[in-house]
Image (cartoon, rainbow, N blue to C red):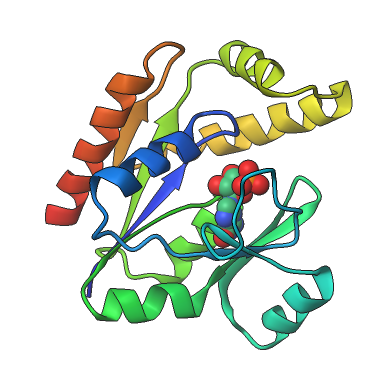
Length: 189
Ligand code: 5GP
């Protein structure tokens, strides 16, 4: 069996930037694609990080038990595809994927303990994160409140992480190095 590293952390913590860096540094890692019902953002390519599907297609895949886990997030659905993970793990590969916390909890229940590892990205306090979120794109107060609730839920998961990588404002370059080192360490355990 290979190793399945989950990257968990609040929205705006920099998970995508860190994963993008890892992809450049260690191309031999398997970066599985997930399904989502959200619309692609500018620059996002179908089949790179996600398969963008309709709600009907997502439900069809749910019924066909194609997902190891799935969860609603921000008004859309996200699901980890069994076919993207299990064959790679059986081939002894290192698989790295970001998920939100409900998905991480479900994966803890279905992937053996020695195979599943967790890296938590700590982006500091809610106040720090709120500043980053507001700087990234315009956002309404209702959505911000929902983000705060999710922040608290995601942060409660930190205690279960194998390694915590800190990514505070201005610290992205150090966080990138720490993240690659964390992945390397967990893959060698
Ligand atoms: P985004 O829409 O910004 O790409 O992702 C929103 C949230 O969904 C992020 O916290 C991301 O980590 C999470 N996510 C991405 N893929 C999956 C997945 O397959 N399953 C679950 N449960 N969450 C996912």
